[in-house]
Image (cartoon, rainbow, N blue to C red; front, side):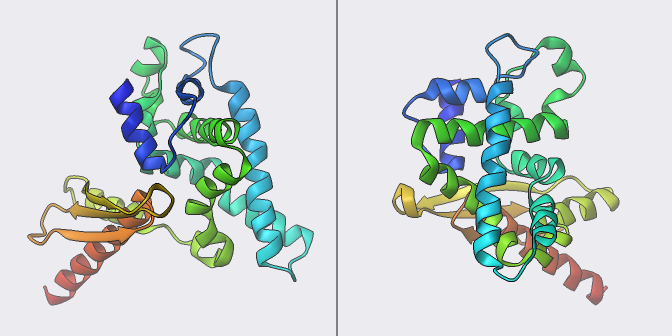
Length: 228
């Protein structure tokens, strides 16, 4: 599990001082008593605080009701599960045999709860600033431009398009990671069945780079469709 955790920490752009906290965050309640449920509780509160403060600062004219609705659109089970998939959390989660057989690793609730637990683990390991940096990577875009949260992201749209056409799912691969840990840049490729060209994307996180690559692939598919 050591190498897997190293890969995950690269994805998170955060290196744990106490790796045991990360292991606990990845332990489902079906695996044993020392699981991530307490971390989920703390992570949920931290997400509300961090995203709430960002919205408060970014939208000074919004009232309480609007701020609450915006926060709910950014921090919810579906959105957090999407983050969990982008981080490939499912393959790292420890769970009981029964839960595994029933597809627990791909379940929205499991992924969302694990994201909350990881957020709490980062907070306990590195403090609020490190935790805020982690959360900002995937929430700040929606905090600044809430309307973008109303539409499905590029990776989701590309996946649904491929499934609808009977093709295989897009395959993403990290080509390069550049820069210091606090200012990394990721280069990712996206291979799509039916497209000869391999599309690339660059971003400050693996997720952002994948989204950019997916968007480029979508543009190619749309161009091919219009030409046909």
